[in-house]
Image 1 (cartoon, rainbow, N blue to C red):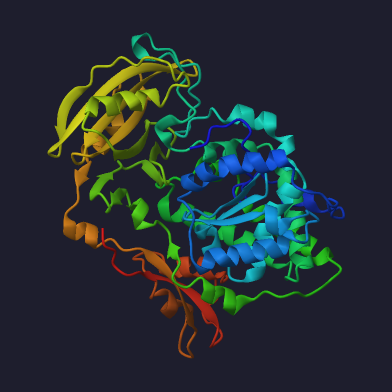
Image 2: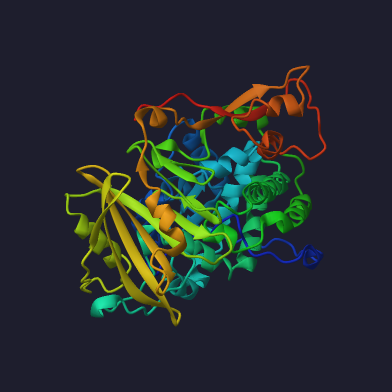
Length: 507
């Protein structure tokens, strides 16, 4: 988790957009001049990097990570920033959520979820150029005050500030609520203030990609893929599976497509490489979607095979799985919210409950006096307590339920409901917590990217039928490969991506 006032992350997706009609008069692109990264920014980024990396699932290693670094350095070298090889860090993160962002000091990140949507190296060059543009244009310097206001936002979608906890303990419910990760909140709230910065970063991404020898029109392709993926996710889930706040709180990137294409066509140097087939082959074997090592969400059920546990969210609630927690929230914005966290413990279940409440308080010296009640949930020992708090003037109940999964491992739900409701509509969530059988855990496999050549008799439908899904295979296949609706056949020999089942894992 990161809750530091200086942290700025600049996301590529989920950004505030102006109507397309407002983009008719596009001015020439202003490129920042030669510069270097300051020692202060280097220190800021180096301090944030470990926690931020952990929040997004840790680094994803292998050939894909090497590719991200290689292309990133090539593009950043066009920015006029000195010491790129020495001062820049390009990192691939183990998250299935499409995203890219940057923090001070030359730290640039992209997720495997976004990498999987790309169909050539030029698209990656634009994305990494966009993030390099944020650094070159010093956008972080403009947002410090915005970030300072943002870091206290709760991950469950409520701003629970100045809350008075029960039993006389004073504190603020917010910040690291449920330890679900402040980083995504900072991204989301800051993004709503940065439309012009994002357009400028798009422009710089186009320029840097072109100067590095890439086809700048690929910028429109990846933005189109992001828009298509956002639309598909919303339709497939009916919003029953939530996405992080920074993705839900703004329009999708569709309106940026025409603008970026116009910018690319303004460039004096036409052409440029795309590097399609080699890029696609480099993606082969990369995990797609949830990494079972972090737990998987299938429908309304979360399963964590490493510890053989599972639970199911009620209908009308969605889940988001991060490296540190699972967040559960109502798709309608009403009906309570929860986080699920866990890890090793010393056998004192009451202490797990107390720590759950303490994690909600900004006053680290606050004394949380509760007397947890013991119970069992599907044969497992549990302890729980409820205290009162205030959410923007509205009284709420905060309940922490700790469950011993083994003699050394405990998990907890932190649930927020209107005052007097207790667990309310999320009681079934807590009661669904159970152990998985060894056979059920062993059956959970990752989905991975495969790359195949289109055969003479292949069609979009026949290729899509090979996808490791039971629903909307053709739509998923089209979005993954940037194939327009209505296209039914593809040229023989073309390389395309499939999502297939990976090898069984040992837990």
